[in-house]
Length: 77
Image 1 (cartoon, rainbow, N blue to C red):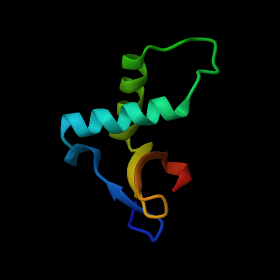
Image 2: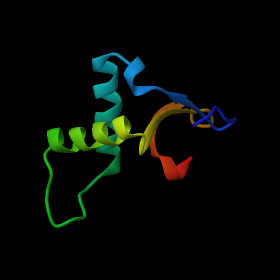
Image 3: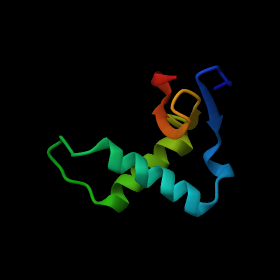
Image 4: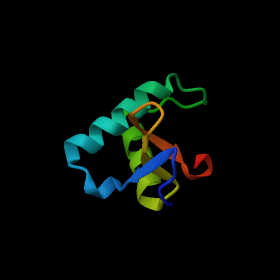
């Protein structure tokens, strides 16, 4: 993933544990209600998002338009 006008990537492993946890928790809370058959705990959701970040399926980015940090699936970039 390269820098673009819209987003700047932020390597998840460059964030402190507290900062990473905050970004993940904000992302989970913003995503809202589960729509699947199984309810997941906050910790399970956190592990799922962290797994996506580790595998490169999702990335933390700085959104220049909104001036905020977000997590996007690689297909959204």
